[in-house]
Amino acid sequence: MMDNLDPNRIPHHIAIIMDGNGRWAQKRHLPRVAGHKQGMETVKKITKVASDLGVKVLTLYAFSTENWKRPDQEVNFLMDLPIKFFDKFVPELIENNVRVNVIGYIEQLPEKTQKAVLDAIDKTADNDGMVLNFALNYGSRAEMVTAMQKMATAVQNNELAVEAINEETVAEYLMTNSLAPYQDPELLIRTSGEERISNFLLWQIAYSELLFTDVYWPDYNGVELVRNIIAFQNRDRRFGGLKKENK
Image (tube, rainbow, N blue to C red; front, side, top):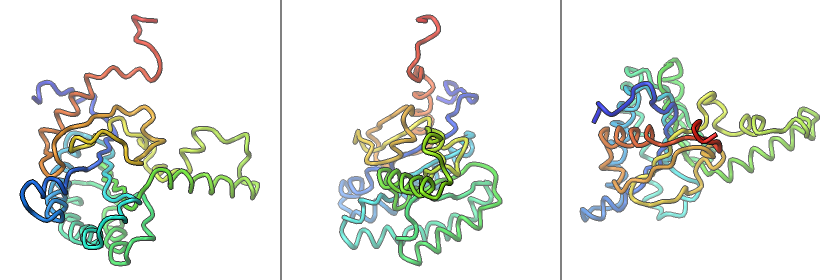
């Protein structure tokens, strides 16, 4: 399979909606949290593979602003996962020169979760390889509302002229601005067979290639990632234009 992969056309930014943890567990007659635990092991594997392939940014949808609606037991488990995950994985991230970044409303997370996240960001801050970007307590509509509020405040304070607002301005006010020049994913993958975006990076994926796979996230691996990247490389990306031969 690697023979079909063009190492010079690896997408700079891959975003993944990590779906199917609960169904993976239920199929094995296990509690849903067992799927989340196994899913974190998949995060470790995919992070290393993506870094080795030369991906610049890997964004993982870890917890949405809507996930608070889930049962308390599951939410509490998910809030504890970053603590366990970063405690064990940060040394490996440093070894692999991977930097942790987080987008989302971190201030609304439990203090112990916030601390684990901020410590991981701090400890990997000097790494200049791939950015492992977690979307944690993130929702794209909320992100855009927040961006609009900040722009409106800037206009009100005479720090921003209305006529100066364009697509670049909007991008600067979004949470992904710190990922520039790779803030927009070229490839968006969703696992588990669901085919929807679920309020994820709605502005940023305007021209992303969307790929949906039936594989549950806990079963996703490096082979699947390479297969998905090959599929991406076989897409005809025109960005609203035409192929040269059709002009």
